[in-house]
Amino acid sequence: MIIRREKYLNDLILRMHNGMIKVITGISQSGKTYLLFNIFTSYLESTGVDRSHIISIQLDFRKNTGLRNPDQLLAWIEPQIKDNQSYYILIDEVQMLDDFEAVLNQLSSRSNVDLYVTRSNSRFLSRDVLTEFRGRGDEIHIYPLTFKEFCTVYPNDKYAAWDSYYQYGGLPYAVLAQTEEQKVHYLTSLFEETYIKDILERHALKKTRELDDLINVLASSAGSLTSPDKISATFKSKINSSISPSTVSLYISYLEEAFLIKEASRYDVKGRKYIGSPKKYYFEDVGLRNARLGFRQTEENHIMENIIFNELRYRGYSVDVGVVDKRRANTHSHLEIDFVANKGSERYYIQSAFSIPDEEKEAQEKNSLINVNDSFKKIVVVKDPISIRRDDQGIVTVGIYEFLLNDNSLKD
Image 1: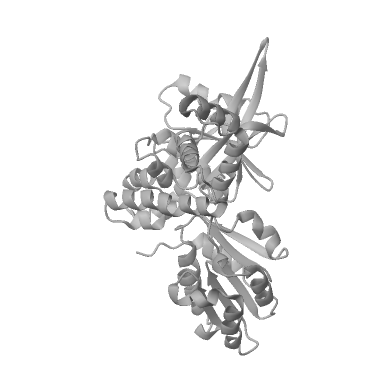
Image 2 (image 1 turned 90 degrees about the horizontal axis):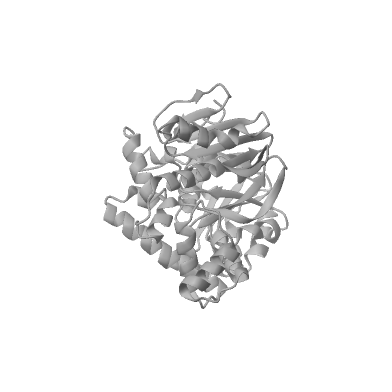
């Protein structure tokens, strides 16, 4: 079954011939190669681009080992550029190419070359894009399947789709696997054999137990406030580990660079400033998070919050955790807003509330939103399958299905 990734195809189309090196990033197995070599290539051919003007190379193939040498790769590519028409060069797993920076800069300097590359998540870091191509790197980040994309596999049953999605996540192979046993085995082995091994090898880490324990802590507490100091103290008291807060912080950065997790910083809404520790961490794919814990901690409310966080990022928003200072008479308290989503002039305040069974719970969930004194939209997302509704205070409540399946759910 073909799952169309229309957003990413459009991202590529909008960047065609912009003079930049298009660098497609994302967690391993998220669909980078398929996007470039199948979806984008098919689009080029459908617009009349001759196949001889699409030069493709997958460097992780055994037969292409010799082309990881920069001189051999250039000697293979350059004779194929035979005229002044546009050529599209697609290179998969570019981090396997020696001296790739010089090679890509040389190729992209040609006026009739449009260059696209994919890169491995943990061997070729996101921040490098800004420098290694002399300011000419244009990053397109691919996420695992959104719930809307996922539902193309379950076209007539969004409820069954949700039950599978929050358990096994959105990595394409896990979605298309036929049995639960296959899904579990794939996600578990992928975490261990790909992500963890890559991190250990890249950073020459010896203390594998401490990295394992850290991942377990972050997976168990996804969406909860934590800090390197707190994690270090827990390690010391629970497993007699001497790992320092600075080492914990470093290990967390490795996991972020591998696109396994993403931090959400705390933002003082009224003071309009960021607050330091603690922070929250969410997993890029909830299936990987669940696999890491042996599918033993699959609390739907916490996973729904993680899914909302990922959806907001997929839609192009930067996402923080909101903090609202509430003063009344002699009392002073800090209220939390799950997400403050920003994109340009847009801002949304969003609460993830799995269930609102009564008025008391409703008041609790809306309390922080009511205390935000600005005109930006305030939204409560619930698990119940309801359409968008607005109360007298302007706070919108929407069901998770409507929120995820309606591209305009934030604006409606």
